[in-house]
Length: 172
Picture 1 (spheres, rainbow, N blue to C red):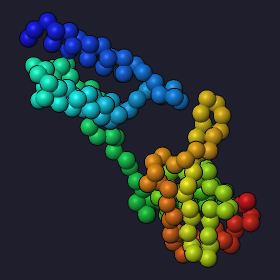
Picture 2 (picture 1 turned 180 degrees about the vertical axis):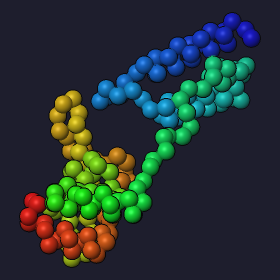
Picture 3 (picture 1 turned 180 degrees about the horizontal axis):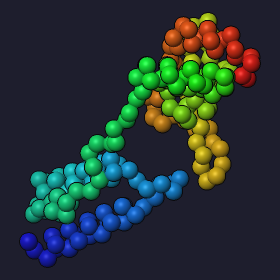
Picture 4 (picture 1 turned 120 degrees about the horizontal axis):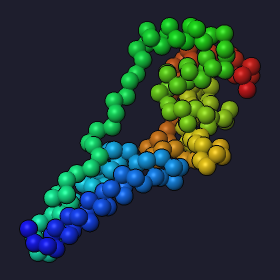
């Protein structure tokens, strides 16, 4: 390996170390999946340079990867597990309905916290997801959903729609 390639490799490793220490806008470390993704993108750029511009080797490949390919496994309750939990929550109406919407509509916590009465259409049995709640720099902020595909209209199960409609005034 020539000195230039070794220098690039050292630069890549230094960059990786900086990325491992870096934080996003909200002060959180980047996820291992994100780190893997940006390393792969950098490596693709170097592969292009090897193929078309005479770079001898890909220094990102020589430096080794960072991050990991898969995010952590998401665990979901079975319906039986959820029903046991919800039975205990029935005497706390606001919490009970929040968990009902989370479980049966499969929405994120931030999406739930951003819901307003205008998001519910009891005639069509739907709830519209078009915003999300976040806490940024100690402030409560309503933002766009996590991804553009997260903007959606969800069909609520009929029993949930009826529960929500019957008690909507009580919890608002």
